[in-house]
Image 1 (cartoon, rainbow, N blue to C red):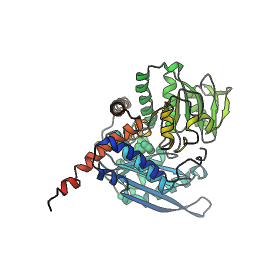
Image 2 (cartoon, protein in one colour):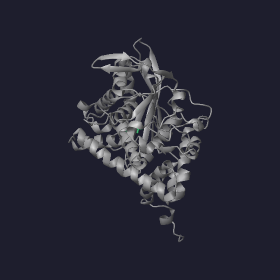
Image 3 (cartoon, protein in one colour):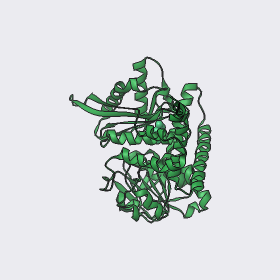
Image 4 (tube, protein in one colour):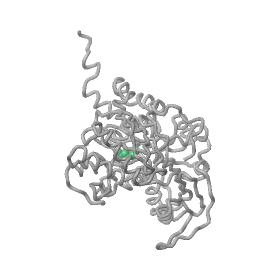
Length: 437
Ligand code: GLU
């Protein structure tokens, strides 16, 4: 992805917390709840020595932050990325707390990661690194403590290695320690596409309100990883015109739209994003313009879907966004400085803590299935996901109408209300100190 512009916040966690202040005005909760959410419960940094294929030792840095566990065990992904640092992980953990509360899941929020470019490692090195990391944080995670999952540049196979390592460490078969696992290792059907599917369900709800015709609606997707591919595929199957797509190397644009299954097939076969049309196994190149990631964001399209990393829309480029609807499939793609500019320009934002919550929702279903030892069909998973997404989309939407606020603020109001109620149930100053000593 492009390097964030000068307008990107230097302290991502502090920037993320600003959303709380605005939402607090409407949430009707005790100020103590707000104060507690400003401080992650526990943060650890570990060093992970790994013997590389060359015989040398390389020491990697890893993190896990449990932001809040009032409503349940910590929940959130693990990312492998060269730019991972403690501050970013804290912000991502905070977003998970809010996301799980918006979806009314019995979880708090957590996040972790390793500072590494996984593309530079061999498969054996990647496996050693993943297993070693779990060793380092094994006392810190568990089905009733903190449950990791995939995130940027991690996948089901990595989750499978990690689960296996945890089971060896604890000498217990414990599939519920990690979600997003491969199906034969206790993963849930439907988990792989769940983030994209959840975003798709949000778009369909919004479509009902706006009454647009999918066939005449153009879409640009920034990021063609797991979530970007899934949402593009579902929208394409529904008739939407996906006119632009990008990955970390850059993007492609085609006025007539792309055949998304072909792009996915070619990306899986060659690891490259290419403008192709495939029939059976045969792919041929088609005409398309090459664009940068920045250009993709500024395209004249109806729906813009940032599905890669945080801070891609800042005060520098917010005014140049032409889409009328922005669906945040990435975590934190819009800075708090950019958000009001977009709202002023009538860009309707479906915020990350709602739009990309399908992933953690099906992670929750996976955790439930692991603990029950009883597995659901894909149809059952997707049906339950639809009910969850619809219910919480409407809860957020109703709050936004009731207070005349944007969907992001409304989502934080809902999250704060639910977390605040849980914290208040443990007693606040009003309970402990009623003026009588
Ligand atoms: N990494 C995903 C997210 O940011 C999924 C987390 C999970 O499934 O726990 O929501």
